[in-house]
Image 1 (tube, rainbow, N blue to C red):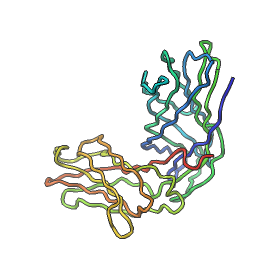
Image 2: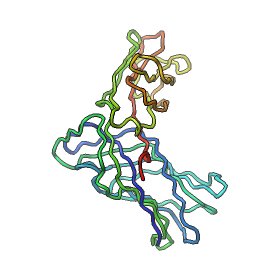
Image 3: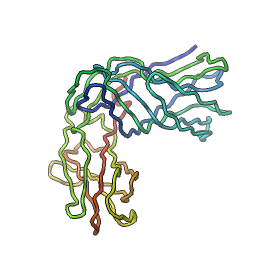
Image 4: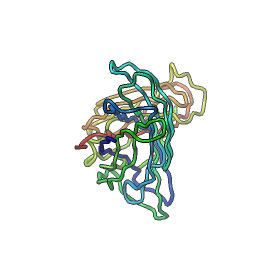
Length: 270
């Protein structure tokens, strides 16, 4: 039975209360090429009940499991959710050459009663535990190959977590971030509309997410229509010093937004 081990970077909140869970958006792709000549009846994705940093564990992942042929054609896509200490199986598609686990949601958990103040913009070394495994198995559930993802680095948010509200009469919110230690590990930012008071037209009313430098120059910008559940992504710029959230509307709206920081899970991994 063949397997490979790779490190993976994980993102954490800056402060965890005792037994607290914290979840957020992810945009992480793990691609695995099984070796030739093995038996593949199905794939298994496992999330282990292990610590990645202090008493913090990965509590849940959600996403898509995709299977491709050798010409990069998508054969199948399956929505999956794996909770800590469990696994899911996905039947192998005919002609599958490689697979992708695309994680869209990621949740962590403080397994201790102790409040853990890790700090903002902290880059630390993970414990090295195996956290996620993607395995091929035969019809008797015997593993025939796998890739095993271990906790390599942990990155805390570049800003203490908060929910942002932008209101029609006062439509702009700007907050500073610190990325001295973790700048290169940040992959993207995302804006998610999580609440709305008032009647909005998503084709007209927009929320902007903008990255600013120290002189308030706009480095990058993206906008999304005002409707609960709408999401927009923006690639990180290492000159970013501030985040601006701006509501463009002529109406009396209160829009609740969540700004997500997304980490490059493979950056710096040897």
